[in-house]
Image 1 (spheres, rainbow, N blue to C red):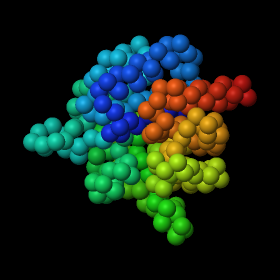
Image 2 (cartoon, rainbow, N blue to C red):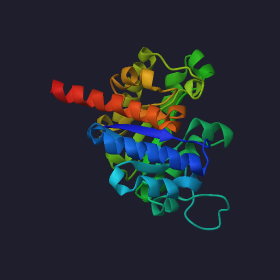
Image 3 (cartoon, rainbow, N blue to C red):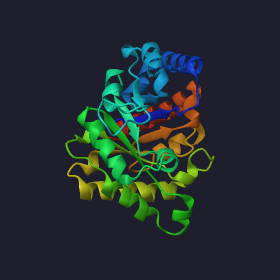
Image 4 (cartoon, helix red, strand yellow):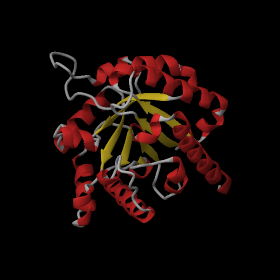
Length: 261
C-alpha cells in the first residue's frame, strides 16, 4: 500500500491562502505525476474552504480532500456541527478524528471519538484516527499504556482495512518543533502494529502515520522506519513546496522498496 501524506491545515488559512496552496499542490503534482505512484496525497482544509479547494484541485489531480473532524450525530438540529454525510456530500474522502487538539480543547473522550468513528465509517469515509501521549505521560513511562487504551477504545466495526488509518502524534511534538527520535517512533509504531493485530484480523494491513513536526529535512528518515505508512503534517503542509518535498520523499522510499523486491 502506498504511503499516505496528509496535510492538516487546521485553522491556519483564509480563502485566498487555501486557493494559492491548492493551486501550488495541483501544479506540482501535474509536473511530477509519478509521485502518485508511491504516495497518496490528502489535504484537510478548514470546513469553509473544502469546496473551493475541491474546485481548484479537480478530480484529475489525484489529490484527496478530507475534513478535520465530524459530528457524532446524523443531520438534524445540531447547531454549529458538520456531519459525516455533509463531508461526503462536499466530496471528501477522509476525516481526521481524535486529534489531540480536539481531545484537549473540546474535552473529547475516547468513547465519544469511537462513536464519531462509527458514524464516519457508516457514511463511507476513510478515518484517520489520531492517538498519542503527552510529555508528562511519556516521562511517567505511560506512553504505551495511554496509546494502547486509545486504540482499545476505537470502534472499527464494519470498516474495511483500507478505510482505517492510525496517526501516532506524540502531543509534545505537535507544533513545537520537537520530533520523536527514530527509536521512539520505531518502538511506538511497532507497539501500535501489535495492538492492531490483536484487535483486528487485518491489523497488519493498516497504515500507521507519524505526525509531529514532520518537515522536508526529516521526512525521508521518518518515512523509512518500519511500520511508518505515511505522515500527518501540520505546519509544513501550509507550504506547497514543503508538502510536495515530503511527498517526494515518500515516493523515493516506495521506489527503493519496489527495486528491492
